[in-house]
Image (cartoon, rainbow, N blue to C red; front, side, top):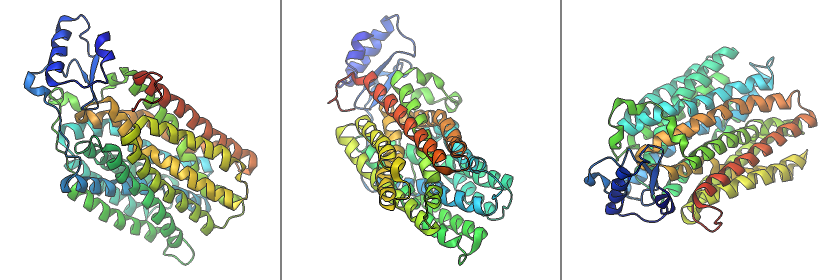
Length: 468
């Protein structure tokens, strides 16, 4: 098998792949752990998937554009706008709830509301991803739309902690995962070479939602606004429009691999973690989640505690999300040209630099705080956009949903704990509390950068100019 590993980044024809299979039949190394990568597919094909007839080795073709493909991207844009646009408003919700319904609860306790939402969005994907791979997106997106809209309608009636937890976190999280997994997976059925660019466009919806929704909520929740109940209902109607477009346009085109033809294929398969590069990238996502959501959730509270008004603090969050729109779009375009891992490693390093170089010494300086929001927003914007395309480097496009959701399921435990841990480190506030929170975020991103670097090295070695 050693000779096959050395050739893993060269181009294999159909006949060559068949020859590899025949050699595997003669070799004692015929377990599912051994794999051969076909760069035409950006995939790693296990020996199990090679046990097919010669006709099944035909190369997968991708439209890489066209009206139908770009409408799928638009549908995915709308779905991610509903899912991640909501979480990008968490700082406004956190600040409002702390001052009103949940004034007797700590930052850490309120933080569980948003962490559980994200945890369910990512952790339940391990079941939704394989279902998408086997049966397509239609029923998943329809069910997710109903649950997402219902969660916001019910949230408008909530006054107690447990009620908010059940509606926003649990019901909203279930709706979110039913939308997000098909949204990312469907793009992989239409794009390969341009996958980073297409996924980047779709994920800009979260950033755009993070600009519009916080400003909208800030007005709706103000003394001159409509109050908490109607603020949630207005969000529900916005999500209804987004979800309607998602149902209309999200499609799949590739059937499941032959090995996925049985009911067993819809269940999680943790054996894929035996791939060292995939496992390291998954750990990197875990620590990235730790680093990401502390600034997103607490930047408004930080600004308020350093002399900014509620309106000024919300503008900072909108500015961060505005910068993230460009961070999701431009790195995705660049990643297709110079390598997806190469770009995400660079943007993670920029996250560390902006946290330590700008947020840590910002204090009550508005210009530095503005600079941090722009720099960190741009750098962190690539996180959500490039995660799935980086994971796609290790799998067949027809298994894309399974790989992405498995990685995100493991990373979801980082999401679950990040915001409450940040709240616990913050404590009652004060400069020492903020320094602990900022240090936690920077350290988490540093570990993520190391993991992604090692994942790249496991495939390419220490060739710095290698496109991967």
